[in-house]
Length: 118
Image (cartoon, rainbow, N blue to C red):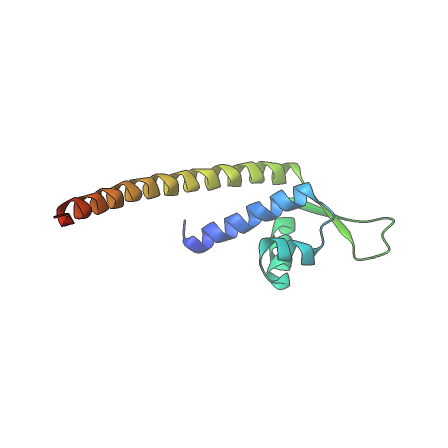
């Protein structure tokens, strides 16, 4: 998977997690929490809605007639679990690679320090 696909999946995962916790979150708040533009947040929400991972329900008693509650569908919960699993596997792999690199660099530093001492 390319880096842009990873970022796309990570954004969708973070959006699903935020909306599960706070279904009445506005698009502006979602954009702020995700660190993306309002337009990108709208695009992300529409993609999740189009894929059937979210439903949007208007607030019945909302003074803000544009207020929606974004609710995860059963498919949304399943996709969130799948995205979480893939994210975790990718991060564990990155962690293992970093751990090996740190061990190699530590060995290099120790070698240089031991040979540099008079």
